[in-house]
Length: 241
Image (tube, rainbow, N blue to C red; front, side):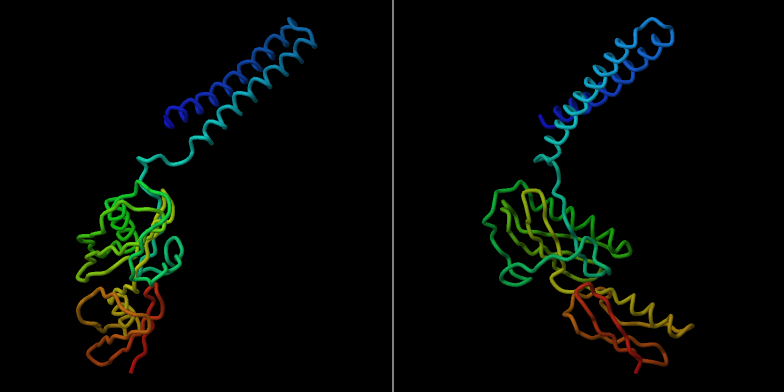
């Protein structure tokens, strides 16, 4: 029904524009031929303008009334991956009970499903880290209410990571890494930039989900670098020993 009304609204806008253009065009043609009196021209302009305005207002009103997402529309989400900075979409506030705690929603019922969550997590992770392989993603089954928080698990490259997914409205969810996710290849690239010609290795696994302020070590044939995870987006800083 919403799609039908939206179509009618667009049609009303189109008809209004065409009718107004045609009416004005005819008035101009007849006026140039001297077949219309000034009063008739003025009246025609007023009526044509009013018709155009009414149709435009009707079309806009219908479009506005049908602008909300229907149940078949996948939920729009905000996504905060742990391996990009700045974070896409901004950050979200931790849920009551802590970032790793599931919370049962008490708000309105939604049509959001676990499949919606896993699909969006996969799409957004691939956008954020296109060089990393995204494997299996699992989220708890619904139904979900507004305020519901679940922990979804993802296989990212060679590591298991977790995302906290919150249902923020009947059509919106937000996703945020439970802890920072780092890609150690970034550290290796940084070391090799600082030491041209060297080959750095930070060991396995390549991807890690760690605590803020945690540390790891990378080495070249002639040096050792200590890295610290700075924030929840997984930014790192390194110091050569």
